[in-house]
Length: 139
Image 1 (cartoon, helix red, strand yellow):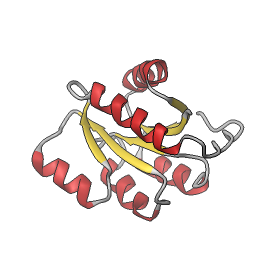
Image 2 (cartoon, rainbow, N blue to C red; image 1 turned 120 degrees about the horizontal axis):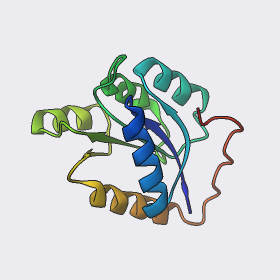
Image 3 (cartoon, helix red, strand yellow; image 1 turned 90 degrees about the vertical axis):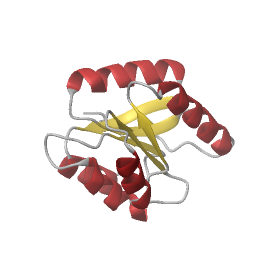
């Protein structure tokens, strides 16, 4: 099963690398992305039924991932939100978890753990129907 995944990352080169690498080694299908908080919040609200996993960076050129996490607090129980950041310090991790993140990963040190999380999550959903990707959502 491939997880319908939304990525919040403001740096295009990192976003492209994450999409390419994670689709290669993890059970993910990226269906959309946003570079800033406002766009991410709008997409997640408009496409509420279309995603299963959101991967969120914290420090964005517009707004922050903390605002995205706040908005995701009302997500469905079957939807997961993880943080992928270069600033994984205990106080930041604690804040992310308080805001409802399921897990926090370091961009440079925790990619294997992120892949394992995705595989475990996909396996837990195995047998459930994968929602179809909305046409034209990846932008």
